[in-house]
Length: 410
Image (cartoon, rainbow, N blue to C red):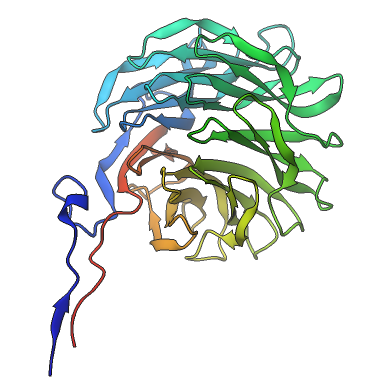
């Protein structure tokens, strides 16, 4: 006897809008983030609030005088720009570069960046706080006490405060990673502290992610610590900046270079991704999941699946509250690099196939950044080569949409 059967969907869980229930694709078209288009706009960073509103920051060359500055643009969850493009830095001589941004639960956000030669020495880490409506809160301020530093990461805490990270030359560590906590008012909380315990060689490129309880994890690159060039290391902290357990190595495979880490945290776990130079014929993207206690969840895994023998660079990762996550990176093709992504369930299982983020493919697309809202919808930004160099973005539906799993005849 032939039986006709299907799996019914819970319609209340379907994503809003005209898209089909099984769609995992983009929301709306690819869009340009920056308004000023002369010269070069690049190295974007993005932060999303729980409601899905987001802000993108980037560095812009020659927008005032002949130097590089930090600019930003706010967007509603619908992708509509909120207000005009704005300049973040107040001090304009010399270069302001490498911005990072984080938003709190109320939509307030903070931008950090590296300012060059502002104090007669190379590099200081600066910041600027903003209300959710884009109004600046106080003036531009210096994050660090040590000289020759550069901002590398920033993350917010549930109480509206934030943690800023930077590389620095300090008396007890000439090339280490340091942090400073700040209250929601922008006032420093406690002293500046060193993140890394291992102080031989250099530690740099620190990134931070905080969970819903305010605990946070910092990951960075350390030179020579894993016995073979560069490796990725981490340190967990409580909400009051007390270390939780010892510093730990993230990568299992230690031959060659492991670098460019990114981290995302959710309730009960966090995930770290990085690029590995020697584990494949070409550079690949790898990851490791951890319980909130710091215990690894399963083995190290390869993120990229399609065309594994091509160069994969600059991963970024975002997670939803349930622990599902998406990784984006720059994939080398025969002609032009493109931005691709891969979605994963909270147990680390790949969800669907690797997908291309960018629509325009005639020239190279580089260095993506990804962030997600409370519902798991995510936005990817990147640097795109067109006539000039600009910042582009693409919105996507939730990481784990309801899908039609089976429809058939027996």
